Length: 397
Image (cartoon, helix red, strand yellow):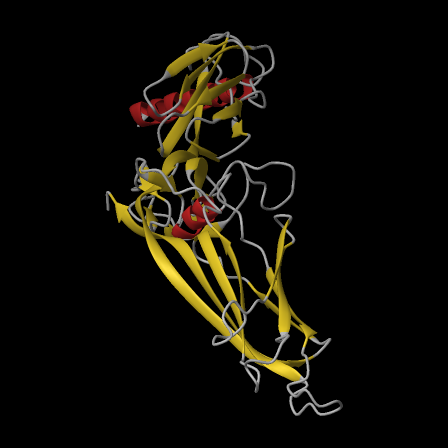
């Protein structure tokens, strides 16, 4: 019985001592005791929890608290990518070069050796990877395929494609020729019409706005042509009837598609009813090239009473015969033709030709006064042009 009462008293004493310790613990905080050093309460925040690879994140643990009588002395940072540092201040920054999800931990330590840890998670978004297939040199008029469809996002996000075709042109008129969006889509086609070196860019954006720009240059070469000049003859004719004092005008452009080399025009009058009657009817023929400042006039004559009255205008070597030369280069067939037909010294006769026929004399066909069954005359104008026409074939196709 005595032993039982002693056991109860010892148990009560132990409980009383424990109670005293618990009551004194707050008072003794900051002092080393058999229970260990007092611990801080770690707090951490990040200014961004989602960044792109290569961006930095600021971490702030200055809200960490520690018991009265103690103070913070260090912060041990683990950034989740194998990098660890220790700072005295509760503030630091870190740059993530590779995409991924990182758990960041900070351990706060006070001057009594007490410590506490907390964590946060950072998502690092990877930039899209641009894979662009395109030629580096083409010729004018070729269809160029620019294919970026194999590009990908490391996280599997949806990509947006923006193409700026030509950095020398500000297509949106915002003052910056290098930020235009001329076309969208992962694959596009263009057909350059003018030779030269072109630079542009492809911008690829993922669904988290990570943006990558790829510049490109393409050399557009002119096409090569062989030109052989061929001699063509062009015959034109007109006819009509004119009373004395009347005139007739003909306008035309005979030089289209080639270079004029020579012209021979003959005006022929119908025989009078009485071929031996003198004088015969006489008309004049005038040709005028206003662009070239050339005009010529002739008058019909009847050299033989058995033949019609005629008049002729002839001119040769209006343009020099083309010399043989090496192949030509041009961006297109139209440009080549423009170049060939407008070379200096080869443009004579390209403008409008004007022919004017005037019935200067249509004398009576009878010798009896006031009897003239034909008060005018029929006429016919025949013109033969010799034209040099280029036969063009492309080489190096």
